[in-house]
Length: 97
Image (cartoon, rainbow, N blue to C red; front, side, top):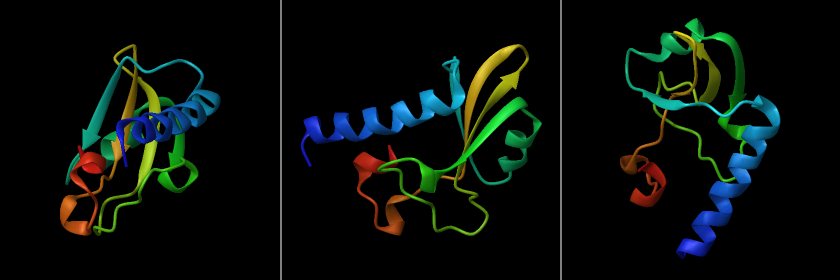
């Protein structure tokens, strides 16, 4: 899919996130193996399963939760990706990057 298609997919997911979470996060964290519990420490967290986000693939790896958690840590609004997809799961690099 071309860049216009990519922009439209990202914009659709971003709109759903804005509607559910309000304030825009100042940082994003991709939580790798062993760090998934960090998302549970965010204050005032809003959690969305990836399945609720348009065009957002769900991870197949055991232990990757597949949820977006937006909350506050050290006074900053952050987005934490608890679980991610990998190229070896069959996803194109443009999706996993």
